[in-house]
Image 1 (cartoon, rainbow, N blue to C red):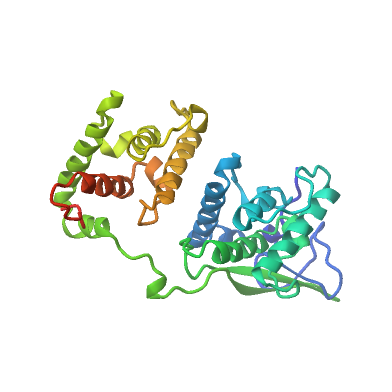
Image 2 (cartoon, rainbow, N blue to C red):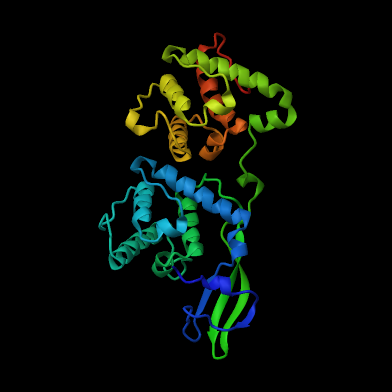
Length: 331
C-alpha cells in the first residue's frame, strides 16, 4: 500500500511537525495539492478537457488516457502526443521499461517540447523530476502550454486556479503556507465560444425544438433508407455512434472498415470511441462549427446531438435545394 500523501497530513498554514516519509532538506520547498483543491469543479473540468483532447489526438494510435497523473509521467504518451502535434521524430526508444530509461526518454521529450514552446528550462513550470514524480500541477502546466501552442482553438476552462500548500523545511520543523496557483488565464468576451443557433433555439423558442428534431430525423431517414436503417428517437439512437458513423459514411463517401469502430458497442468506452471518431471525421470535413464533447453525445444530450446532425443536414440539404438559397438556421 502506498504511504498516505503528505497533503492529507496538512490542515492549516503554520509550522507543523515533519511527517514520516516526507523529508525535505533544510531550506527546501515543495508544494502540495490539498483534497479541497483536487475536488474543485473547474480544476476537474480542466483535466477532463485535456484528457479528451489527448485521446482525440491519439485515437488513430489506439492510445487512451484515463489519468493524467498515472499515464503521462513515463514519457510514452507525451512522446506520441508531441510527434502528432509537431510531426517531429524524436530519437528515443519506443518502449522504456526501466525507471532510468523512462526518465531519459521523458527528458528528451521535454527538451524538445521546451524548444517548440520557446520556454527556457529555468522558466518552465514543469521539470523532468516533477513530471516523472506524477506532480499533477506540473503536468497540467505542461499540457496547457502544449494545447495553447498547438491547439489554440481548444476551449480550456478559463481562470482555473487552485490553492496549494507550500512546505518549507526550517530548523524548527516544516513551515507551511497557502498560495494560489494559476493554471489558465482569465477569459475575455472574445475568448468565449460564440453562441450558436441551438443556444438561441433552446433558450428563446423551446417549443420549436421538436419541429427541428422532426425535420432532421426525416432527413436522416431518407439517407439511411438504402442501408435498411431508420431513426425514431434522435435523443437516444445516436449515443453509441454507430448510426452517426454510418450516416457520415453514406453522406461524405467514407468507407469505414469494421476494425475502425465498434458495430455493436457493449460499453461506454466503446461508445465513446465511436462518437470521438465521428466527431473527428466531421472536423476534418469542416462540418462541426461549434465545440461538441463526445461525452455529451454518449450521455444523450439533445442540443449536442442536434449540433452534430445539423452540420450534415445543412450541407446536404443545401445540395438538394432547388433555389440554391443557403439554410442559415433551423427554422
